Image (cartoon, rainbow, N blue to C red; front, side, top):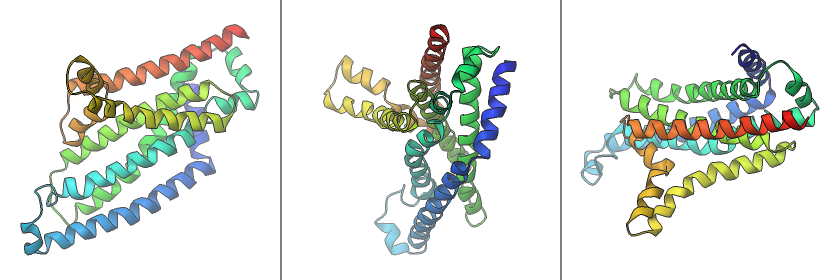
Length: 258
């Protein structure tokens, strides 16, 4: 574990000293500020007009569904592209700069390397999601609402970002080209959402149930509704473990080849 802590501190320092991180933070903040303000203004207009409320659904009149969930959905959409931008340097750049061989010959295990880099990326994503949660928190001053559903929904987005981080770390381990790592990562992030869509191709039966079970959207929906489910947590944990394990195997195979 000592080796993973060293890698974690090194990578985390690299993230927070990188101009790319601050550019991404600025871009996220700018987009969130505009979109959240527009959504909140629309909700406020609806809340102030009883005539409009008569034709509105219950979800449209609920701030959690009308304001916070679109906000979190936009964060997820941005993370599909922003996580690859952050992760592409983790192993691909090490190979390009010829520091990968030094890393492999250092007295740390492949697990330490992967775990340290993964946790550093996850901490960085947690910081970005923390910034995004400032917006619902600021709304608390002007509107009363139950806080727990929004926190659980944000936790769901964090779990999804952890899945992105694991998949994108694996993608970065496959190449020494950062651009290729970025493209492969985006493809992986997008493809995992299309798995659930395949369930709609079946009217019923075992295949439909299988695709629904491995659908990211199926397990995220419970968290979005503000409900923690054991099967969903196991699903996310399994995906994270799988891709971290695959990344560790790639690193270990490179060590043996060298």
